[in-house]
Image 1 (spheres, one colour):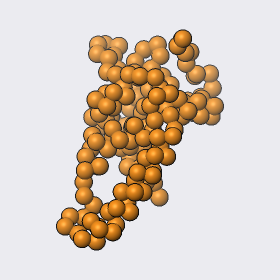
Image 2 (spheres, rainbow, N blue to C red; image 1 turned 90 degrees about the horizontal axis):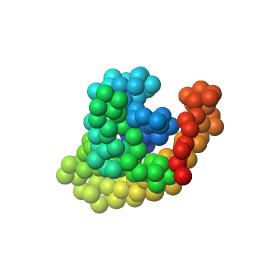
Image 3 (tube, rainbow, N blue to C red; image 1 turned 135 degrees about the horizontal axis):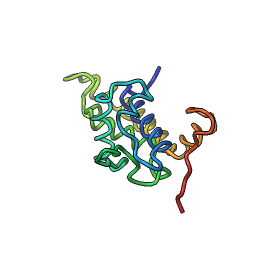
Length: 150
């Protein structure tokens, strides 16, 4: 059973992909979509939500695309999921309208589980996921980008 929506899962994958490939130039939505076998328009609203949340930065122009707005070690999987949920309104949708059982019993239990789940995701940074992807050669051997951060 997957606890994340497809959109949240894709948001995490997109952010890690951008973290791995955004140097020396930004990653275009078209290239990102091709790597994940998706239509580019499918990613645009999610990427814009990540920009709005301050996780990514959009770069305009012919060589534009997306890059990190802050250090990848300061962005967690939980931050990304929250941004994806806000973009789709997932966090505001009631599971069952006008249900006393949901309001009093089920809702609080699920809300607690959601908080615990997001707390676990908050323990994992994008930097850690990038290192795991590089160690496992997710994009093939020798594709590790150079890091000129001082």
